[in-house]
Length: 261
Image 1 (cartoon, rainbow, N blue to C red):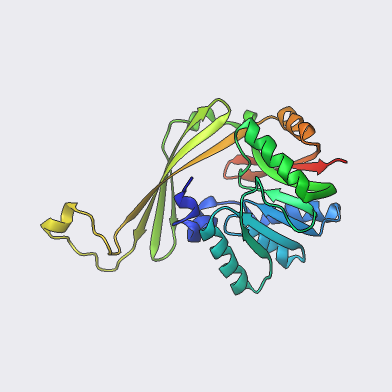
Image 2 (cartoon, rainbow, N blue to C red):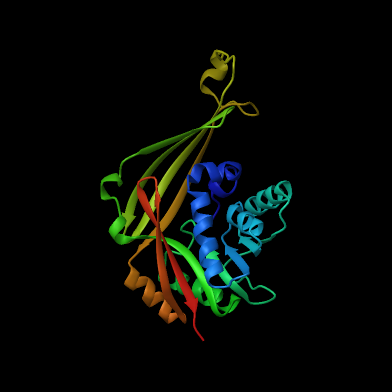
């Protein structure tokens, strides 16, 4: 499924997401080091922030993502930063590394929302890991659903100098899955805006520096800890830790699953 957030909006992804990137990397590094993990695969790596950051810490990291624009952006960013991770276009349902690794990541709520697809993802991830290897994933708890925000437009904006980005989001719950419809408006700032003539006043202005609009949909599943433990058990994992980081008034949970023999 094509998504503007993973295509046209890739250069702005890290700003739009508004994560505590440094705090998140610090947490992941501490978990990896405590478990003597050296080789890591980031499944659904997006533009590659975590991959590049972990590479600077000395980990051997591979980023996997189905979006070619994401992978191209990640490679170019790594080249500018003089880091040397590997980036691969592929699906986390069937990607297999040349050798088993110590840890896998799946962040930004990238885990599947359907039971059958989640089991498929966990089974394939298990094949990538050595015995005792870790899977670190982030998720939202059912108890953290902010019901008062559902069905209401939530407006966010980012001033990037020559560009203003505005996002209007409306979310609704389908069972335990949040479906969010996001409209992104990219408004270029011009020092001398021109008043359009009658022909251009209502018609599209193709090939110009006019406003760009993209519509994006996302789905995020909410879990309880007992539910995650059951999914882990059925795929020969054991949930060993759960960490929480704040995110703009909300909470982001990080589950650490360990592959059992």
